[in-house]
Image 1 (cartoon, one colour):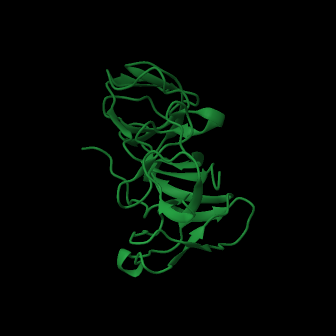
Image 2: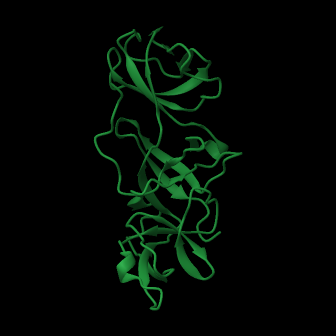
Image 3: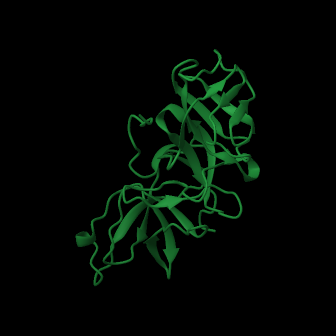
Amino acid sequence: MSYEAPRTTVGFERVYNMAGFPSNPVPYELTGNTAFPKGAVVVMTDGLLARADDNTTSKVVGVMAEKVKQADNPSDEVTYGMVYDNPLDVFRVSVADHLDVTATGGSATRFEATGEFNDDMEGSVIYVYEGPSKGAVRTISNSADNFVDVYEPFPEDITTDSKAVVLGEDGASGAIYIGKDGVFADSDGLKLNCDKAPNNGPLTVVGIDAPNLMMDVVLDNVKG
């Protein structure tokens, strides 16, 4: 049975500001006849606030601080929505499409899983959720198709009873990269990328909560 997180975030959930500023959402005029879920990433389009899409890489305004129903946002009226637009705000968001693996062997520094990995996983985070070394979170130092090595040894040797999830790859400026499937942006299933070519996106990871399959991110291209 694959690992499931205890809960999924409701879009991007604001958790703190890196400079210590309090929550201070600002009103923006919304594109009419559109629903804006709380926690949705939003961009500026033709002078109005719009929903981000899977291809969004810039012109990000911020994250919706409130829910606005489509019925409350008619196209023939001016409607405003409150947005977290401080570029130093940090948001917690659930990870999409993590890799779930069962060990075929291993040691204190190696997790083996035949045919499950690739050779571009250095910098990824591996979390052992079952079996020997349960609860350990480690950063991958080297990888190939059949194994990953970690910088700091696991507390126990990995065996065939060990199961783990892998989140992300090392990216530009040390960002954790989740690949083209990115991270969940909202309850509608929108996905955005962390910053790494060729799938550049507007997110940089500043923290990771592997047991909950969540990351703390900032929006790189706010008002870019």
